Length: 213
Image (tube, rainbow, N blue to C red):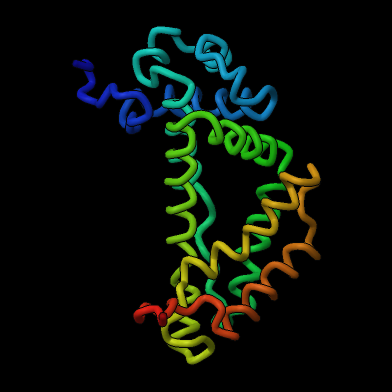
């Protein structure tokens, strides 16, 4: 049992007291190493060296690179900028697209996300952590769409989460297929396309009636 009363299950550490500075230093070092070298070279001993903490601390509290990535993504989701509410669906979705664009264009965050996405293809815990990260971020922005429904801008059964996902999807696709971060024009196109599709009813609930024949 940990002497500070915190969980030692990898990837479940919660900050508090003296552990907060250790966690912050370790996550910062892990993010730097991910961005520089990718998931395959995320060595816990090297993370400990960069963070200037004991190796046993890192191994005991995070256990594996996957556990460290899980905690890093959880922290990033908590620290990410809150949603913007402008009173207009188009402006709200543009704000979301611009946030994604700036994140992917960031010299540290862009490579970090590419590394985690690559890891998610082969590592189940990395995939689960990435899924949780995007679940949190989509849930943060979905109220903008629900407010647009309430204002009568969108059909009443619009799937808010799917609208939000449709904003960021083409931006990530561009990054992953070209290696080039999306620019402001790409962000605007993604937001406008998502808004137009939502108004056209593309994201309404599917018909659940019995199939004919």
